[in-house]
Length: 60
Image 1: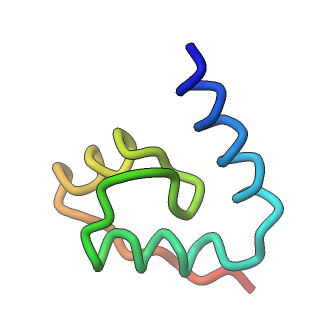
Image 2: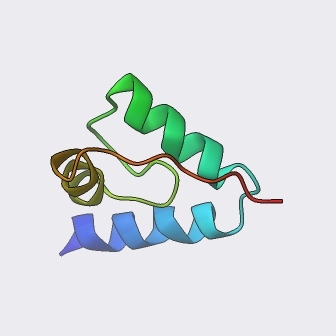
Image 3: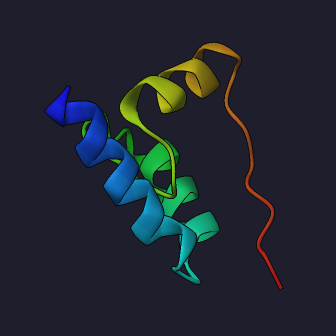
């Protein structure tokens, strides 16, 4: 549906961004539960939290 298209469009923006890793880490650390952050959807971030979190390696 339209929401899935919006998520994919947001992820496309993330793929072009140089701050994706930092953005994702901030979203995980601060508990953001809505929207796409660091290239991950709400559902994907929830799955990461269920697995006990993750530390994002900064890209060089």
